[in-house]
Image (tube, rainbow, N blue to C red; front, side, top):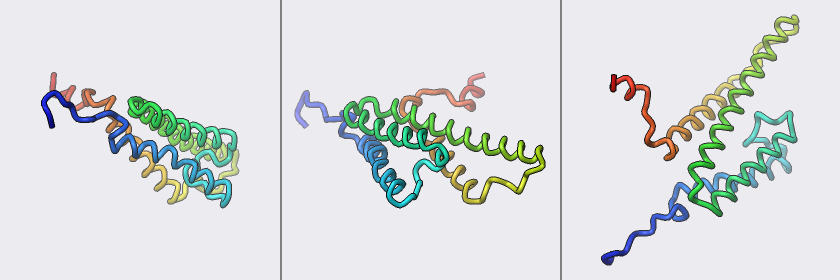
Length: 152
């Protein structure tokens, strides 16, 4: 490296940014599986609301296009998308729970709406989303509850 020459550390060159672009633009493949074979792997929580489901597909593709065009926004886009996805996951669980409670109160309860597969899916998805949020570089300088307690 010559004197005065700085290495290229632009966001466009980072492996993490390239992986995010592939993750989001890979949504087109999941959309094709959903449309052609009926395999809704990516957005199963919105299966019964096609407008929201295809809107979510469009939003994920939009995230990929934004990051590809403006890699400096990758951390912000990923943080917003992960937060929205986590809210959707938790909202879906709570709405299912409330529906089961309403059915039980009406005397129509036929059993738990939560299958082992749905519980595993929610656990894995939630763990990955929370991990993604906490690993986000925009939150790198945050103070953890443990550090806050140590400061007292």
